Image (cartoon, rainbow, N blue to C red; front, side, top):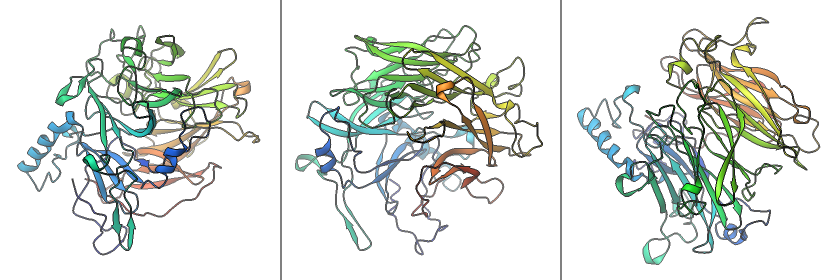
Length: 535
């Protein structure tokens, strides 16, 4: 452990740097786990007693790091409470220490400093939720870990009560209910199961997993005692066009196949005849209830959605003893879908339409056909953003798209557009209005034009407005989101924030408010409470 105890030399002054650093955070969004989410639909096993027991559960922030681990920090002061290292990544601790020993000054955390030589740890975001465990007739709060470019594992960790209790200043915070060790209580955490492509370090082998488990799992209940965990196989480094990537469905508590056996709980995707890249179930998983007015933790999910790298957006549902796939969208040119779709129902009540927004391409793709100099031009791959609307009564799907190179540049003369090599760099968001609102739904995408400004490029937020009840196309508005490549975007109050690295010597990373774009969702911004130094 790094051992950060939350203390800051010289007092709580923003900008004070402590010598201990956390390994760089790459491709991992923080997960905040506190008191249980309320179940209010009365469709599942009674959850209110679990909510009561853990209603005062201490809030921890979890994130994957290039130290090869998942770290949990106290939300109050940033002190490190727990660090978990997946067993298949233990060998990377040896690599990091070897690099450190060779040059402690240059490689204080074991990284050489060259991006091409970076040693990835847990380089993916975390999913979590409360899941019914029929073996103990109780809920568990379970965290699901996939490793991105760091490894080929998928892991389930029980984090129902991880907090030991602490005194911070003059305030004492008690341990979580039922926290304990051994025979005197429940352990602070419990490994429920671990699967890897090669069965390394005592994990269970699942040979269909890719070399890198990029797909973040999705969790939902299909009935009171039927919970489902969906995950794509990830990325196979040397996959050929004959490779049919798989999507897996597990019991989230035991890791057993959801449908009686693995064959019935696995969906093999179909490849395009002439794709730009070999197929993989690379994108994050999505499960939802398509006729629900909004996301609720106790929705009964009836559709899972999986994007692939051969131009398909798949709808997957349970049918008898097996899972069955149907193509919601098939792009005729086999364009790759790297990011998961955003999904929502419309209108609020009764829901008549299922909405899907998604994109093709990624600036981070290393294939020359997807991120090379010729993209965005006739005869080559052209990155696009899409809206698809499914009428629930008929199942009819309508789709519209626009090439990013056809979007207007907000800072250029009228008629000028974004550059040919503009690409999407983050998953989209979709927003639906209240039932009594006259507004239409809309989606937001974060894109990057590497030639928008000399040497460093410019990031933009693209807004798509559309009417599902009379859908044939959408309107677009483009907002500048700052120079350089943004790392992601989020909401803070009514503002849209993008994260940006420092551009130029001595510049610091920062959060930037996108000008002229507000989202009327309420809330307010907050000051910085604590921070962690990164390598």
